[in-house]
Structures are given as C-alpha cells and as structure tokens.
Image 1 (cartoon, one colour):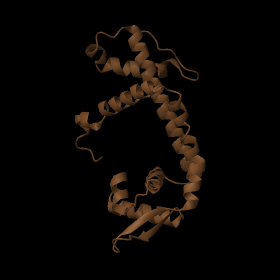
Image 2 (spheres, helix red, strand yellow; image 1 turned 45 degrees about the horizontal axis):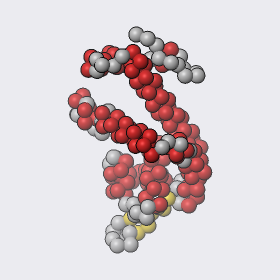
Image 3 (cartoon, helix red, strand yellow; image 1 turned 90 degrees about the vertical axis):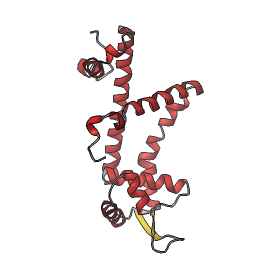
Image 4 (cartoon, helix red, strand yellow; image 1 turned 180 degrees about the vertical axis):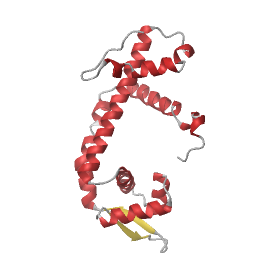
Length: 193
C-alpha cells in the first residue's frame, strides 16, 4: 500500500490512519473500482476531516478553560444563545431534550449556571408554573468575544467556495453524517445515548 501525503507536523502513521482503517474493514473490496490515486485522495480527505475535528476539540477545550465551564455547560449556553437570537423561549424541558439529559441533571446544570451568574430563570409569561431560561448579557458577551468570534471564522472558508462547491461539500458532509450515524451500528443499539 502506498503512503498518503503527510501534512506539516503529521507523522507517516497519522497520515495513514484512515487508509488502514478502511482496508481492515473491507471497504476496498466494496469499491474495487478505486485505484491507488483514489485511495490516497480518500485517505487525505479523511485525515483532513480528522484535523478539523482536532482543531474543533482544541478550540472547545480552550473556550471551556477560558470561561471556566464544563463541556455540558458550554453546550447549554450555546443553545441558549442561538435560541435567544432566534427569539425562542427556552424551558428546562427543552434544554433537557436538546442536551439529552434527565430533568434532574438539567436542574443541577441550571443551578450551577445560575450560581455562576451565567443564566437567569424567569416565570414563563403564558404558564406561571413554568420557567424560562435566559443567558445573562455578560456571559453572552464573553462567549461572543472568546469562542463566537473564532468560530465565525469558519464562514471565511465557506465564503471562499462557489455556490456549486458549497453544495458539493454540504452534500458530502450530510452523507457522511448519515453513514456514521448510530442507526448503522448494531453494537450501539443497547447503549444509552
């Protein structure tokens, strides 16, 4: 098997991780029409996606440290920011469903975020038995200045593509998401998601 082209800071093993993974699972038998050039190109593409994922993880870790919050806290705040920008009201049950955590875990998360002055709970305007959750202006500004501004740089890469190129990339990512969905993983059926 030929080696893939390595990127700066990448060793030969890392550059071939997905090539080895594909050959070990019979993918090459499923696609016999692929030649060495195709396999090298696919390997480069998969490694580029892995580097993107690594960059996202590093950014996420740095932002959590900067804001002194957990990954779950950051996901909750991100959801609240997006909902607020869209004019949506967020209830604890909506947040619980989004995060896929129990109501008890949601209560603990909200208590922690409220103690840290990241959120406020208000009475629901239409249902006095329910609460709405809102992110504080200070936390939203901090998130926007740290993570948001950096995350927005993704737009630059997308803007450099033509409309047709964006459609190809969008379709590819949607297709890959469907392919790696746990719906295709018999071994994961009994796991709690």
